[in-house]
Image (cartoon, rainbow, N blue to C red; front, side):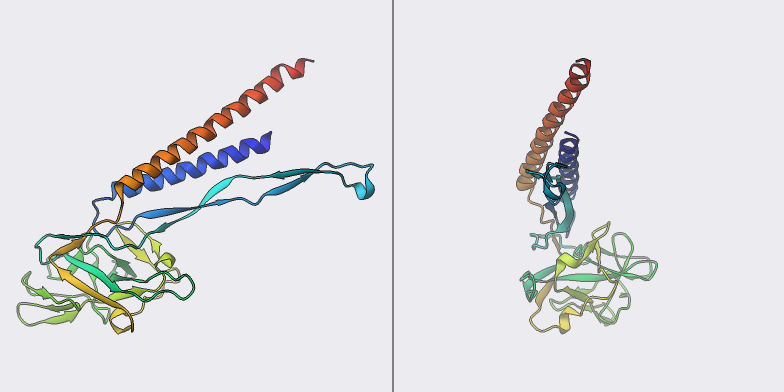
Length: 271
């Protein structure tokens, strides 16, 4: 009976975590470059129950049967599918377009390219959000103030907001200054760890390889465009309703267990 409580409770917790993930996806449906999370549900190992009998040989008994010990949400992985392009006309808006990406040998999943940014503490992160701006000193930064890096890992400084970016990432300023945007290639995007503000980092902290110097990686940049979120609102709403119903079903089973325990304590105990 108590194992049933634990099994049902694990199902409720898993659906609650899934609902929170889907809610976060919906709230970021208008965030440029946002990659929707998808849940990986997994069952705990099953146990084989046996009835212990001291009179049986070697103290063993008959098999009662298997019992499932519940389910949990193992992880939430971002779905790296290209989002739609929206034209903004702003020179500081830049969209990354995956033209042809090499596939990972183990998973068969296509890779993805990302902008390279530097945090105030000097660590490097990656993003698909190309909603950039120029700070007071002319450095190209994210909306949150992180520096956008070039292929050499240096911040890009411009003399004015009148600059152009080619499809290969060459930045040309009004006074002739040039730089090339640093684009990292994630061969297996599922190994990236999502952080806040649309940023990603690698598991071991190592830098991603340069996409421009990798054979088979074809991409282009579009100035004046933004990549939209890849959240499918209709699908997300359907999955959220499914998670709610699964939570309610587990809740009703939990109530049935509670009533059975209450009856056992109040009625059977008096006999």
